[in-house]
Length: 300
Length: 198
Image 1 (cartoon, chains in turn green, orange):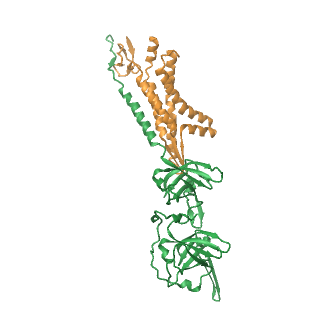
Image 2: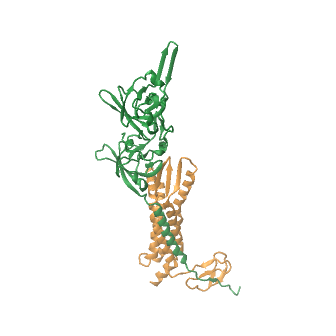
Image 3: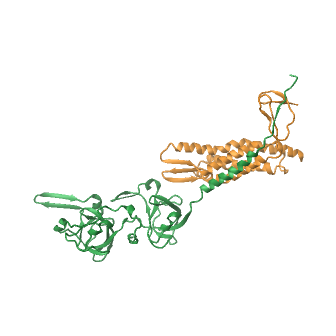
């Protein structure tokens, strides 16, 4: 081993690649920041009676099931009687925030109409709204519950001696088909007044000489031939319902705000009336109701 | 002069390489003397990049958990605080050290060595020890990334909950990798060279 081998010299290579790192890092930080920009939203304040389940940054505002904002802050109002919920509402639905727009809280609900908002059992409640008309507004008072009316129709009042078992949400039945809804009642010292509407497609059924009676849930008939009992469908039993009949020679079409009286019992011949009235037989879909009239939202 | 290859054990003669050149074993091509540069610029660039990434790593959530429809985004500090409140003090301290303290210490020490090492604070021996220390704690800061990876994989097996890595995790992994590479790039010979010149 006299001629010792020599170690090799590797030529210099420059570390220019290192300048790509800060470039890449700046790009990466930019992408991260850009993708996590706070959702651009405008503040909207909703006053609510009870904010159970509302959590800042968690509770969403949804419209037709789409996320359009979230709750930013939940604070008691100055007089501590209400809760001020500050929402951050996305730009795209800001134009729907008008005077007649109504907000309400969707939480699980089990009632005679069925089970609603079951999805909120696990996800927590969410806020939603129904757009209305009027000037732009950023402050609203929430409804206690979802509005009963979700379609346009012909409004009228029904005067009754007693309230019977009719409560808001009760159906108005025409030949046992729901054609309208009672959405409000009011007590006077000598009578009770129901506010109701016949849904738009059936409005032609309501005539000046139409009659209404309270459809008792259970009918019990005892005669010499035996006893018979008939009951209304369960939801009607719980909320009560009102039946409507129009004579075979229908009068003029009822006008908006017409007044009728509610009979306690139907007269025998009312049940046999078979008037010929043209109307759109298809029930209205909720989706068709794109721009609800302001009076639709006046109910509460 | 003779040099001994630590890889294949071959004795061989050598001449001191020029600046920027490296010396390799003639038999196994193992690098015996890494290239020597005039400055530690690459290490500095990497450290500054790591410092930049350290900010989003701590601001943005590293984990997005959705449990029963409730979304929960947690940054590293959130996680530490939650662990502390849940009584898991040891784990909280571990995560704090590994995820917040160690990366920051690494960045600061590297910055110190790169920028102010020529000031007579510490001798070259102490500086050198600091560098070895930073090098040795390097891999520990990847623990957090590893934790999140395992957690995401585990939670994915369940139906009720969902876990997703957040944007902070990418930045965090970047910090860990960049500081690791920076401390490896650091040419400690420059520490001694400048100490000799003084």
